[in-house]
Length: 569
Image (cartoon, rainbow, N blue to C red; front, side):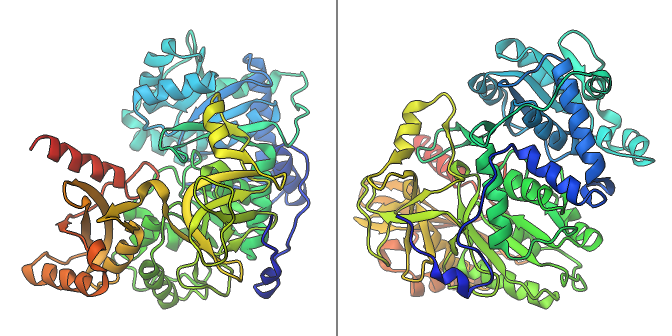
């Protein structure tokens, strides 16, 4: 059952329930275009597009796809960073009743082959710089067509030739031949196509496929429907309590990530807001972006905000325009939240960083910290219409408030299932006695009596040391409370005596050199604040920690490095 939500009324005007339309994703974007035709839909390196023209770009692209032989029910792989062409293609596919399979352009070749084949994509859309690789693997896939575009295709005016003369100079622009089609040619075909192009799709139809390790750690295609993505946009707008048409969202998180697609792009584009498309994040350009664009909303993983604290020459950075600062995708430690909130206040913002919780299997966020209030360590309260309960792991047995167990989610954003993987789907989506389909997240957490959720750890990342449960995020929280620590990661190393030995990897705050005194100070701080069985037995200091493709700390990479060391003696 749903934990009833009277607390919602206490923290802003967030409704308990919403009325979701039975329509496609693009239908909601078109509604925004009708309501706000002259608002800016997207901004790409300063090149902007109105909603009126954006809607027309989608329609022409949809016609071009049909003219190119792509039809309703088929899948197309979008292997792109955040560019106007990627967004236009996403919604054009949606308009003709096809689905987009979104993958990272830096995925290794074998991953790309697997993703294309598992989604049964008939075409692949990518940038010129990735064209050779994808053309080479195409014969090993289900795809028959490669659609290429250049970054310059998303630019206007003088910026288009300037890009070709500078950054784009070394990138070969392939011409149309055989099974290769240029995006610009596809658009030209669309201009002369006169057939019907608006498929009659429903909320239950698959709109996008994203890839997730899920609860078992192996990558699977997550089928997200029109309803899933539209509901997420509506819930985020309601729970965010700050979304205003005409405001700007900084879209740093990529389109192939649930948070990036669902919040930074689809939520922005269904509310008349502007999505500032950032194809590649760089700490070097981060401050410039904030100064020049003055976004009203930022959404990111913790490492994005940790980077805020390390930016040089930002004493006069004005963040007073910020109305929503959202964090998800990984654990935001209490200490890092405290540091970021202090940073925001120092730079003129009246807002706190607001942590959410969710997973790709439910698009992205399913709960969020209220705008004007938070509980220490909490990841917020459920979105409208999202049911959350805590059960004993591996069962349907509900646990009382304050008791840790597995987090289960039910509601309109829960995926249709894993693509072509009924076994994994059955393990993750389960029908309970209450008549609801519940998503078993594989995450540990608890809920208090006021409905605030507390995330503890991925169950698979639980460390067992001397028979005791140790949660890495809690140890990381202690380590990062030390004034000299920027970020940390705790992993388990196999140990003949303790079963698992705990090791901490630490990055010192910017500019600080590692000395015996600094190391000793951090060790003593940990010794004082961490129970003996959870105390790291090893500390390793690094200049930086490995990151996943979406910017999370890659703890699995560290585990693999340690395993290799052990095997090599």
